[in-house]
Amino acid sequence: MGHGPVRRQPPPAVLRTFDLPDEQMTAARSWVAYGERRPRAARRASSVAVVRDGLHGVETLLRHRAGPTPLGALAFPGGSLEDFDEEECTWYGPTPAQWSRVLGVSDHRLARRHIMGAVRELFEETGILLAGRDRFSVAEDPGGGEWMEIRQGLDRQELTLASVLRRRGYGVRTDLLRAVGQWHSPGFAHRRFITHYFAVAAPQGQQDSLLAGKGTWARWRPAGLLTAGLGETRLGDAVGRPDTVGRTFGRLTVPAVPLLLERMAAAGSTVRFMMDLTIRGSVPEFRVELLDRIDGHTPDPDTDPTPGTSAVHDDDLRLGVELPGGRWS
Image 1: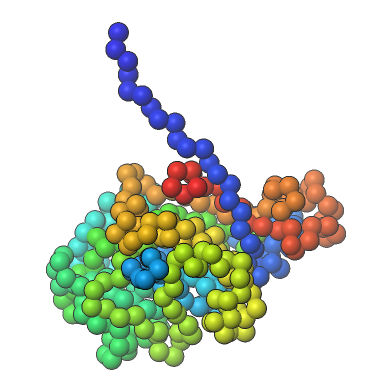
Image 2 (image 1 turned 135 degrees about the vertical axis):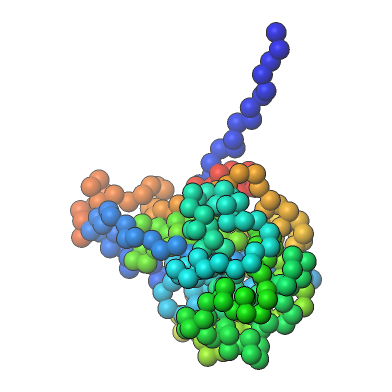
């Protein structure tokens, strides 16, 4: 009698822990002390890791975000979605229906918003435009001059990306993006995102630039050096902003960033990194939880110290993420 196909068991989940960003400490302390158990509603967001090859392996573009943000003070380009991201324009590459399956969302319009939001935020913040006149080309040098005025108009929501592309005869190059995963901000956070992370290789002939009048700092850095420096203040000191000086990189970012940096560093080249992101089915989903460093559990005021008098110290609070194993572990 023949045997049926052998089903491989999925790799076991792996719990990884991370420093709690300084800007989230007050909200985390309140969550533990007073037992807030109804997370605030989360907005949808997209973020894009841009990569290229450098002397020390894969490099990525990090930028500084002023003020509290669910994406971290030092993060990849990105931001929240807008209703006008549903506006239609020419697409080259996977359709919204195909992207909905990859992103694990049933609404094709939401998938369109995540893709258009990713392309829009990347262009606004860096001048990198994932669009071309056909499925083989990309816009040339769209960072400055008249393009800068367009970026500012997009940032002020005076323009929509779809209208800009239609007017110039461009279509969005959705085939250049690779989906990475869906991340949920921790429940205690005052501002919460459900963020789809993407990756893209820096297009030839395009140079990144800060958004005039708004950008504060952005630099290309080797992923391996960034990963090794999570516990150091060197990067925050180099940024030189009041909210970064003297703070470790691990406390200036969110877990999705170092995890993706690890994969970049391990890949060794942009081609290998992008190939490793090719998946079958939908991307994994990650939920960030608040943990007690002492015994690794989620603090619960019903069984832990009396609400309002928590004995858990700030240094004991960590963020935990269960990874699906395999390449993510």
